[in-house]
Image 1: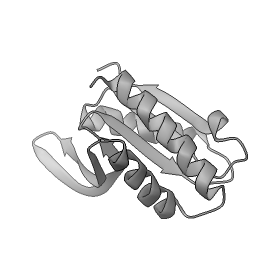
Image 2: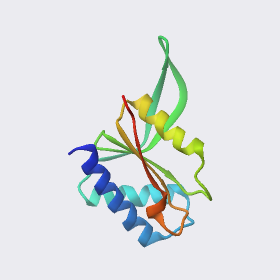
Image 3: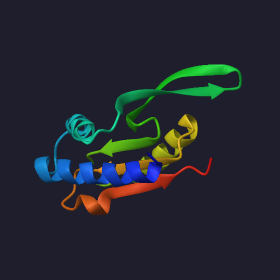
Image 4: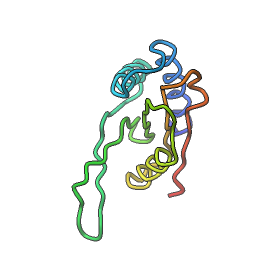
Length: 125
């Protein structure tokens, strides 16, 4: 399955979770619900995946974690905040670069229209 196909399935799952739960819950709730929704759709999902940061010859112990990793290809970064800021977008781009993944989705569930708060990011590799 390609990153684009995964992205399409993930967006559908995001809409289903939002329609079911609505806005205003903790990120961990959306992460759990989205994981279940994706598994039901036949997608392999890993949660809270550690990302190593290599500086020179040293792997730094800094504790970055991807919210969701689908099929070892697509990152989903989940937020439930008043407003997404530039740092949220930059963080996903950094996660893509560090993990050497091509595509990621940033989603903010604390909204009245989730379709306007899903952002697709691409790593130029």
